[in-house]
Image 1 (cartoon, rainbow, N blue to C red):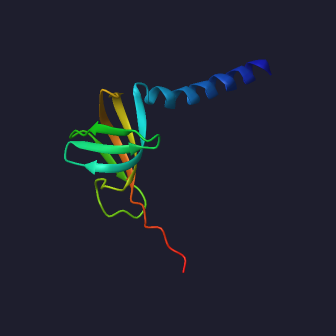
Image 2: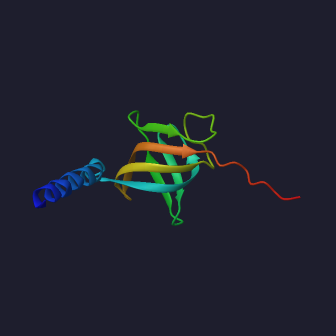
Amino acid sequence: MAPRSSLLVLILVAFIAAPVSAHEGTSHVLGTVTASGADQLVVQANDGQSVSIRLTPATRYRATGATTSSIPSVGDRVVVEVTGNSDGMTAIEVRFSSVAPKKTRK
């Protein structure tokens, strides 16, 4: 029985380690878009910092929810996968969603 459990542990470790290595060298910026241009996105991060992120032709965009745009707009919520550090971040992928206005109670 011991060889089977060892094999199971080895397989589980391989599957758990694979996603971690896929994102090695990248980090994520979460927040709200405060400015958007052809080559730059400025995000008010959830920690309150304003973060400028370089956009390139290789940057991928993925809209979620009820957005009608193919790129993020001011006010959209984003999760940006970036390379680099606070001195110079470049976006690999921008996932975004428009935030619907809050309904007011009558």
